[in-house]
Image (cartoon, rainbow, N blue to C red; front, side):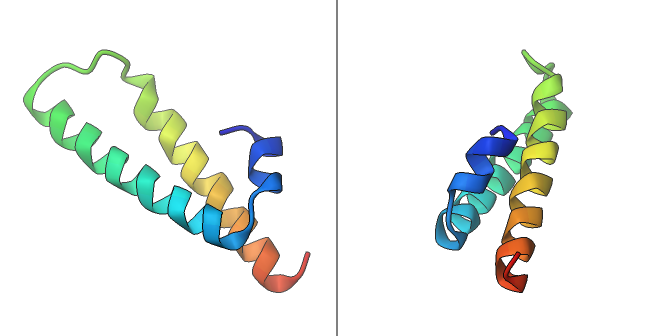
Amino acid sequence: MKKHDVKELDIKALKESEQKIREELMRLRLKKGFEQLENPKRIKNLKKDLARALTRVKQLEKGL
């Protein structure tokens, strides 16, 4: 999810995206504990996407 993608979404879509990202992060963390991941950078990228979504939600709530 890129910066311009996040700006186009509304609060409802961002919160749905947040939930999906959190679920995928949980699955990847569990998978990392049991086996080697195909793309270890995926966790880092998902964390950044989550931060972008949460930041945009806060901005929208404040009216920025």
